[in-house]
Image (cartoon, rainbow, N blue to C red; front, top):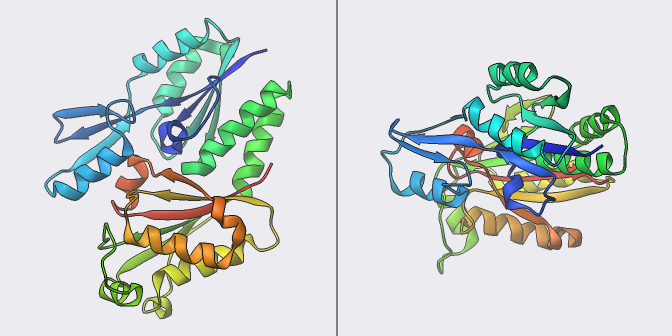
Length: 277
């Protein structure tokens, strides 16, 4: 049985190599309720974040697309596939759409709702697709996604003021000039801010030390997500990681989705790990 997988675009699946059996469910980006863009199709993550940085008056919203567009994609998929699996970030409001699609397609469609997002969600969809192609059951494929989610994490740094390029100033001086940042850690259970006593420390050092402690003695696939590929903090993060750990030289780097950027800030940088298959 051939299964087509659709995964919400906050996963960033469009920015990484993936088989034709996986497609993204786009979100609708609006500016001032007048301009409308489909995530990735009309507006890439890079264009979105540049718009936020250089147009201070921009006030975007990100919403789910209409059910009619999803129906169209499903109808096309069912011409070549036996059924469809929708892998959805449950933080996005798909409840009405899910109910409508259940009514429309019956046993031709199934749903997997999760709080995973970003590269972790993309990895879950990829491993699910792999399992189904190996003729494992849908329940087994869902269990694999559960296991990945439970054993993966993302560490997020949101500089209040980012710098887009290096100058002749030293790293130490540059960081001390822009010390304000919020460090968040989110996985399947918790989101919390950096402790008060750590606020004056080098924000990148804190991020790296927490990350390395989390992956110690684990077999994982490390990744970085970024909103600005020229970010000073991104370059600093990469340089510190390379000094500390050899295997991080081949770390995956993908853009952060507009949805996550709108939620956590236009300058966010994330480093994380996914349980290795």
